[in-house]
View 1 (tube, helix red, strand yellow):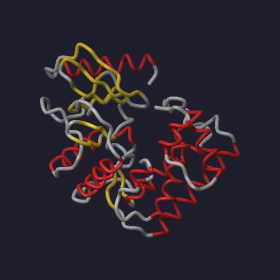
View 2 (cartoon, one colour):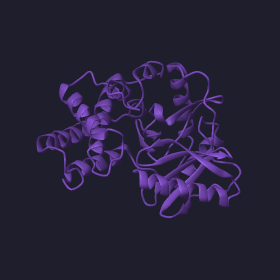
View 3 (spheres, one colour):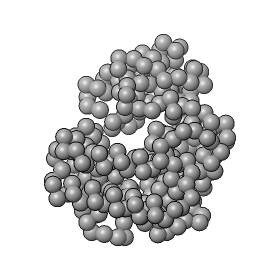
View 4 (cartoon, one colour):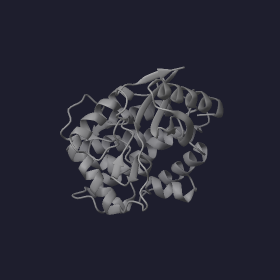
Length: 288
């Protein structure tokens, strides 16, 4: 979000928290892209804020509650208020428990174990959800429409469209087992807390092979996850690179250094395998 929207979104979140009896004299921005993550003090609440219509917060709340009930490693909703999507000044706000960071970072083995536990919990949850191919279709629409990606060169546009379609089809043709997935379990969506590893942000949940989730995490984590189909993982990594590249060229994208990241993704895709992981590219560009 730009500075003006951050100010408005922060005011909306603090207003909602205060109205619910949670003192919010100070707001600390923890993450800012298309959505805003805030720590509200002194009540110590984690608030997620998005423009109304650009979120699926009701689905996220229901899924998070079901996963918590199943004992999955997920962040829980703020227990002092009703588990609702609060709306104010054009923003949708959800309130979550704030967790103090652990003194040490997650090891790859701990990350993999938590993701495996999350997947096990998700197999117990029955909720209507999109398939991973629906998310690919959203990326294709961004690239196919020059009005949505006006700065994308024609040659790169054609290359991305072809890559998205071909790799999606290759994954479909493998006929791998599918289940409910996080959708984007990258390091930015897993907290290292005193309670252990906890996953957040379930708006991207979809059904697909577990390798689609693994394509978002560091390679060292994948090495600790059991029974991975390496060829399928390679295909999923290529697909995820192409999807993220499409979103970085969306004219509404507010990811930091989006054009720089978009160009690096295109370069990596054109170079061919072995496919780099997202965290490797981010480190290469000194991105958060």
